[in-house]
Image (tube, rainbow, N blue to C red):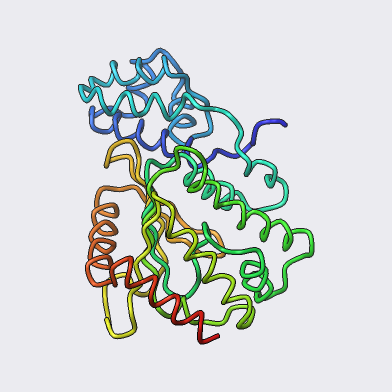
Length: 283
């Protein structure tokens, strides 16, 4: 399979971090090009994720930029070292690039923190549930893309149930547990799927009950992917359609605090299981 023509989320993030190193060193792109004995266009392409960069090149850039944070340099080297194509690449010609980028982000994350308000999380949707969600799209999706979106959505589970999978923490609103997407039978099976996932050692699920009232972050779903160190974390405001990837320090701090507060007010995992069981019995 040929490489993708568009940069992946991982390549874009590496480029963004190299740009931060350059700016921290007080260098313009022209000055950096002279320092690294290259063209300014190579600098800008690298920082945009469009130009490949080797581990040795990353170390040389960090040295020239006088970066003394060796842990950060090592983490950046790791980001460019793994160039294997993941399962999501099979959908490259069928789905928007952001769908592939989300799957890649989840796969490489050191941990995942997710919140969702009205739908089940993308990583744990059953096929029937995903089918019902995408069937509600306006305008209707073309048949081939519809099937691809459903299949891709279901395969996102691989990020959290493969050997050595990272910790996965889900905060889900009671509304998402009760909205009958696809009908009662689909929701009942979906709840069973969610309860089974909660039995995994790396999975923690907490529900925010209706009684909790207002809380920060209640108007959106959040995907927070942990990097090898906190400055390399990434936030994506997860939607059925494309969403923006955020990784500034201010954004990371904001969404960490929001997720912390959600977990504080949410039911404990065992209470969440009781709630899901009660809802399932009522269907």
